[in-house]
Length: 474
Picture (tube, rainbow, N blue to C red):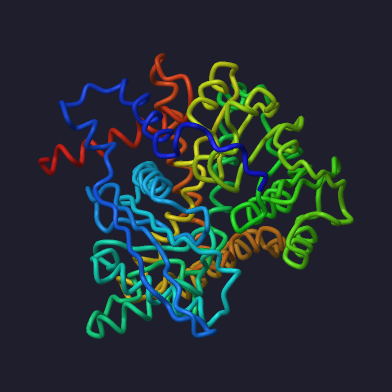
């Protein structure tokens, strides 16, 4: 994803600097600010796994709990050769703030395993994942009531199913075992809409932003989302679903996609489904017939466009390239794609940044729905779906009797909306993202001292976290 030069300031330091900036707007008791910033605990494990060749290999992994002011703590597990302790701590910290912003009653956690999953067979990967899960469980870092992982970079529902089954084997009497992880396949206790959730949340965040005309004017953009020219970095799960939904449902033009091997550009708009299929087949965007290829992927970030959506990795916009970023609106679909110093430079010149801790909160929101489903042992819509259908049908019948005319198909389709699990999940996510943005916008406009949406979002989260600590008694 055209990784920028690694900044001198670490990821976790960047996050702490951003928290410090927001804390200047509060008068909290001494020590509480440091408590809000500090990582509660960090576990590092090393364990051997026998590979298909008979070789034993040692793997290293981490799980961080940033804050357990709310339980369980929540956060994904990523499999990557680039994962390290500082990254895990930073991501766990962001999870704490993310959950607070969208009113999900979880603390923040994160995990990582130093591994390239593409280098191992399915059987090897299963053994590695199950052993990592066992290590985390034995140290108290997996439980439906205390610490609930989810998929992240390099992991998917498959790995979550392995972890859930491992937990079940270790806890055969725990009837809530499925709630020990989220992001599972729907057939194994997962929830429909979880795979698309983060990308769908980005879409809902943008829609809500464009409903606030005063905020849109800050970015010097016209007030409608339709027709906007968008550059997206990363066509993984988040970037793909974001691009897909924006282009097919909101009439947005995706003019450039940046990937690890370069960028592909089409001023008329890229065909995202075709590009995704090409990426899966070839491993990159080079050679895609539907656009112009540029080997220097980072140049895509610097294109003239209306909206730039970094949806890949952290530290992609740094002091090295920030002055060449031309987009008036940056929407952080990835975690920490803009460093603290680069963020300060963007703020100074009036670029609007919608922060990661809000924009990509769709994943944890729908994970919360899945956790509730697993704890309650009933799927959403099971008790009221047919009742809703009957009520809607009677309403349509009544309208036809009163008017003496048959309802148009468009009106009938609107009234006959199916309240199945996916529809309910999308409805709940949409409501969550809308209400969260409204809180952020209110904080932004409610203080002359708050001049950016990241600080506003941080302040919204800090207020809730501090209140919880103070009411519980530190």
